[in-house]
Image (tube, rainbow, N blue to C red; front, side, top):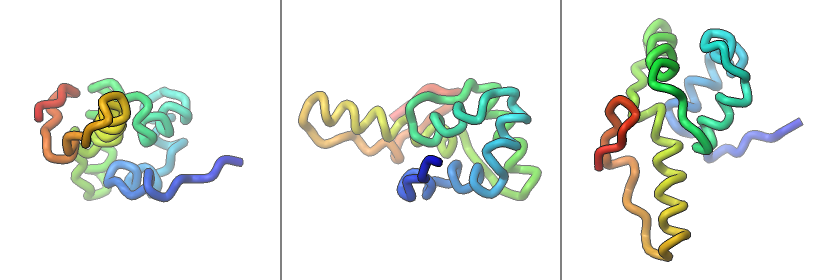
Length: 105
């Protein structure tokens, strides 16, 4: 049994996944549930079509999820990787904008 890392589950996207259910989202998107965990971890990102469906599922529950909310874990991982590669402070990923899966800082 795997344990959740609390820090990863604090984002708005991860909190939605936690309340909606990983398996339910995976079924709705026709993906393996492991993909959802990869998205939360920031290892990969959902396709834009999947992100739009996630937004719709959240909206049906009265939750407003933006593309920024959904892609933020990946953006934060990229900032950490850049910091580790260069040894410099990462650019704040949360201050940029992600439109249609393309980060604009």
